Amino acid sequence: MAEHEIRVDYEKSVTAQETVAHNRWHPDVEPVITCQSGDEVVMETLDALDGQLGPDVDLEDLHSLDLGRVHPLTGPIHVEGAEPGDLLDVEVLEIQPDTYGATGEVPGFGFLRDHFPEPFLARWDLADGWATWAEIPGVRVPGAPFLGLMGVAPSHELLRRATERETAAARRGEEVLLPDPAGAVPGGVVGEEGLRTVPPRENGGNLDIKQLSASARLQLPVFVPGALFSCGDAHFAQGDCESCGMAIEMRSTARLRFTLRKGEAARRGITTPHFQRDDYWVAPHFAAPRRFLATTGMPITNTGENRSEDLTEATRQALLAMIDLLGERGYTREQAYAICSVAVDLKISQVVDVPNVLVSAFLPLDIFEDELS
Image: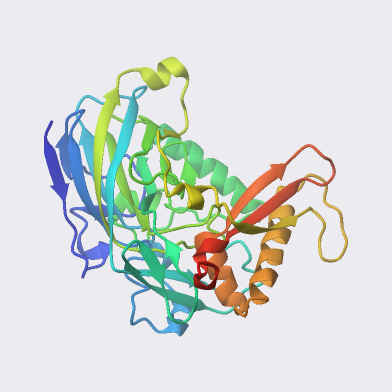
């Protein structure tokens, strides 16, 4: 087993260090290093917004973020011998967090974007396993660092299929970020054709699965020779669903181990990411909180319309009810929305009792300092 490193410059944008980072998915992005199956790689990662949410940023700057720079990815890594049909097993050995994290509410972005038109930024201090910020008093969020974004390069065929289906969605008026060379790293053909990093796809990508912390194993089907693995978008903590569009975003140092399983994706018919782990991803009373408050949501709009089996509307209602509940504790709606994004878990409770499916929002009470006394 060998150990490799990919270091980035935290003081520079992804646009200034394309030899070690990129921000589009494309099979023609050149690898940074080559490793063997069984090797470990240490990878430094920039934050998801490429430094645009730093501790000194002006709140009004959230109106004009350069979304073309999202997400800086460290890599790619060429895994020797990897071929289409193989399965790449990525074991997360360690995620070292930064000391600063940010949760932004960006106008026009996030699950409740129609309810939150104004910018908001929580600037978290990360220390001793907790995130705190004086302007959200009484709250401390337990850390369970993970990489929100891990993936391999798409094949040219997957690139074509993804572009076609996302273009069709855009034509239907749905929310999609299509290929755009503005801010793309690298440029050229990759910038013109490369898939944006915002959604997950068959090759992995922006999974935002908080259970992928240290000791997890992510299994990715390989689409191109060498697999071309990249990662980024590290989170200190996140509620299931990352409702405002951001977790506690941070820079990180990740240590990963790669194991190639020849032909296993083809043999087992695996075409999308799988993951597993053999221990708790965080302390058990936070993974399944022993003390919590929960709200529920059904697909019944505020105007009384019943939208049968609409999980999106049920989720919206559960989340809005939780924001109201946090308001009873004295938090502003913007603070409450941020707390939901980093600590509240949205779960599907049932999908069979038509017309009203049910979504629950779980608030762990142990994040509140007054509940610990």
